[in-house]
Image 1: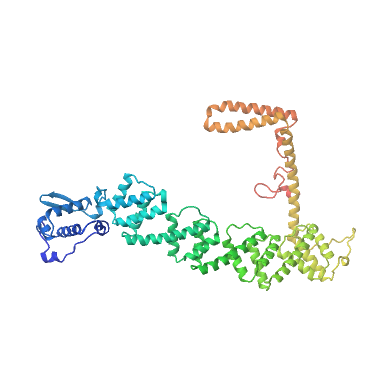
Image 2: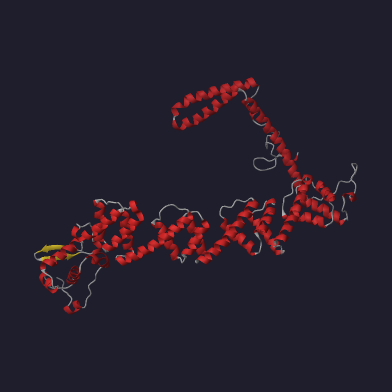
Length: 570
C-alpha cells in the first residue's frame, strides 16, 4: 500500500473518464441498467476502501443475480473480466484493447429482425447462406446501428440490385453509413433519399453520355465532389449534353475546366460551352486549312482562337488567312503573327481580309513563275513584299524576269535580284530593252552584285557539288560490281552461307563453345566457294570497295580530323 492516498473530500471532486469508443460502439446496444452498472463500477475502480458487490447492488437497486448477469454481458464485450463469482470480483479492461471477437448471438434477440429480412429476400428471390446471416447479426452486435435502420438499407439494396443482391453489398453500404455516424432509422432514411436523388441524376447523365451500366459507388463519389466544389446539377447536365458521348472521367475533365473558369451555374455553363464550341470549331477549321494535326484543341483555343475572335475576325476570314498560311508553310504561331500584323493595319472585316489574301496569293503566283529562271526562293512574307515593291517601282515583268535570269546560280537569288533591280531603277531603266547590250566579244565582265560572302558561298556550293559527283561515281561503281556478283548463283549461295556461319560463330562463342570447331570449318568452306566464284567472274574482294580519286579524304575534301585535304585547292 502506498504511503500517500487521496482524502474522501478529494476523491469526491475527481472525475471518472469514459472512453469515446464505449459511448459510440457499446453504449447503444446496452440497456439502462447495464450502462449504470458499468459506469458505477468504473467509478469504484478509482475509490479507495472496501466496497463489496452486495452494497453496490443495493445502491443501484438491483439484485446480486442481476448484477452478475450484467457483468457477464460486459465480459462478452471484452470490457471486463470476472475474476471471481463468490465473492464477485471484477477487473475492468481498456475499451481500445477489446478484441471484438464474434460473440454467440441470442436468436430471440433478432427474431423479428430475421422475419423482416427474409421477407425482403423473398421479394428479390434470394436466399442468404447461414454464414451470411451470421455476418449480418455479428454486424448488428458490433455496430450501434438500429435494426430498423439496417432493414431500410437492405430494402434499398433489394430495389437497386434485384437478383444480383448480395450480403456483402448490404454490409458494405451499412458499414459506410456507420462510418458517417448514421445509425438511426431517420438518419439512414434521409441519406438514402439523397442517394436516390443522386441515382436519378446519374441515370440521366448516363443516358446523355451513352453509358449502359449501373451506377457504382465511385460514380456517386464524383457527384459529391462536384457538388462540394459548388457545381450546380444543371451545369453538369449541360456538360453531358454538349459531350453527347463519353465516360464520367471525360465529363469530369470538362467539369473541372468549368470550375477553373469559376463557372458553376447552369446558365453560365451553357454560355461558356457555346463559346468553347465556337473556339473549338475555329481551331479545327484553321488547322485543316494549315494542314496541321490538332489532338487537343483547348491550348490552341486559349492561346490563339479566343484572341482572334475577340478582335472581330470571323471563321470565314480566319480560313482565308489560314489558306494563305498553308501556301507559305505556316503553323499556328506564324499565322498568329500574320493576324497581329493585319490587326495593327486595321484589316479585320471579311472584305478587306479577302482583298489582302487575294493580293498576297497573286504575288505568290508571280514569285513561283520566277523560280524556273533564278532557282529556289523561299516562300515568305518578305519575298512577297519584295515582289510588291518591284511592282511599285514601275518595273516591267520582262525586266524583273531578266534580273531573275542574271541571279541564277547565286546562293541567295532574292537579295541578288533586289540589288540588280534597285540599281536599274536608280538608272531609270524600266524595260530590258534599255539595258546595255552584252556582246560575245565584250572585254568587260558583267557587273556582279554579289557580296564577298555570296561569292564564297557560291564557290563552296560548286566545290561541294563537284566532290559529291566524284564520290557518288565511286560508290555507284562499287555497287554495280556487287549487283553483278549477286546475280551469280554460286557466289550468292556461298555469300549467304558465310554470313549465316559468322552469326552462328558469334552465338556459339557465348552459349555453346563445343560447336566452334565445326562452325569454323563451315566458314572456311564458304570462303573458299566464294573466292572460287569471284575468280570465275574475274573479280576480287577489293572490287567491292569504292575506289575514290583521293584516298586521303575519300572524295569529301576533308580529312577525318576535320582539316581540309590537299586536294581541296587543286
